[in-house]
Length: 335
Image 1 (tube, rainbow, N blue to C red):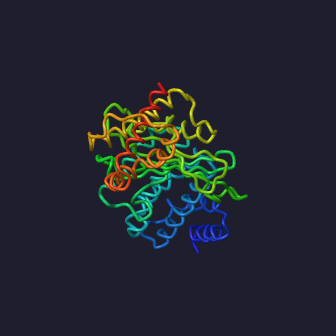
Image 2: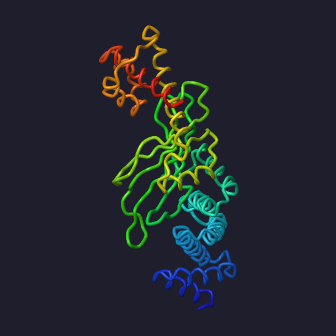
Image 3: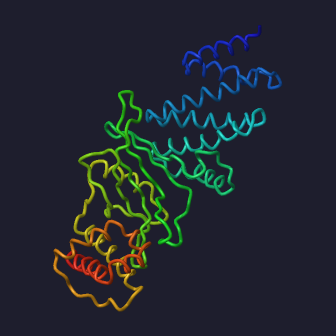
């Protein structure tokens, strides 16, 4: 029995007993020493990839991003080396490792270095080469916040040209509480970088941060107008904003945010009323009348837009007049 075979068998035993680090050390040692034409080489390389990938994962999920980046880059090189020896499923590991490397760079605050790896994923998406589970979105950010796990996911789909065509989130952060071992337990809430349905060029942002509750209690939910983004998202700004929201800081500049919020809502309602000019100008209504109808619109702008004809037919012009007057009134109050 050769020395390489003995070390391989020991490494195999270590892997089976979950002693990943020692197995990795042995496999790293014997891989370059083994003849690549020897059938044993395939097994050594396979387990070397497995061990390196597992160490990458362990370090990444524990926020040891310098180490996870080191193992991730090493695993990526090994996967490339293994492509001639294994099947397409093995080769697809490349894209999962690209994703993991992006997470490590974001964790280190080196967003610019993550860009080239994102470009590889986007190209593979456009070429329809991504494996199932990675073909629509990818995890790009992960960190722990107090007793919570926070996962950031980005969708490959581009910002729709027709803003009225759908509801669209480019990025979603999922916030979980944790089990005693630090793994995810329950999803508490999501933070969506949500497309804003703007209908006027005077609105200078494309996305707004929105908080949607799942199992969380005693939490604020809704649209957070303090945090808006252009189509070309500033990721450093986004990461900072997410942490502010986790702290509970929803409106750091209340006056300016109130103005932005009501202006955006007013512009939206104005765009709706352009479909029928006979409803303009509007008359003021009593606050009690306004408050009875406005939540339907303010909390469901997309529903109002999508079903505008049905709403007109069911509720008549008075409903729309009330909504518009409410928004105009509050915009004036916010100035």
